[in-house]
Image (tube, one colour):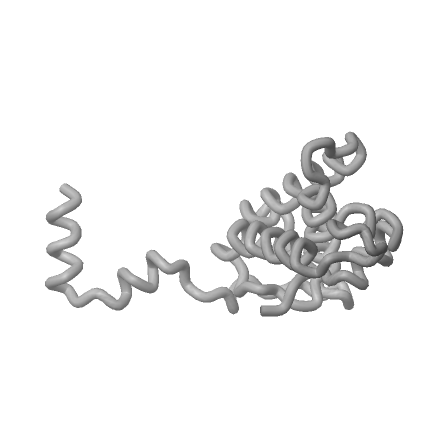
Length: 145
């Protein structure tokens, strides 16, 4: 899966020193990729879960999702004591993500073109319902009532 942010993008945004300090668990001065990749994967999952109802995920070429991912990854890399500025940025990014998920904000690509929501796959529940035969659907509905 393509991630919304990578190590290079995080380094460009927050600096090599901060990144190394957050993910250098063995003290050799270089980021430990396992910890970093876990934080990136967690951020990707959080973003994809939030927007999957309206967009085909992962969404490519979307600078705002890259920015949101960077803020979420950065916050996740701080273990217990997250600085207020870092927590504040992550909070704003999650609010934007919520607004995207609800349809209050639309996604633009790097050329400022609107990213089409119609190309999104059907939600899993709708896909399951579409795959049911009439008999199976009737049995499910009877069970629920």
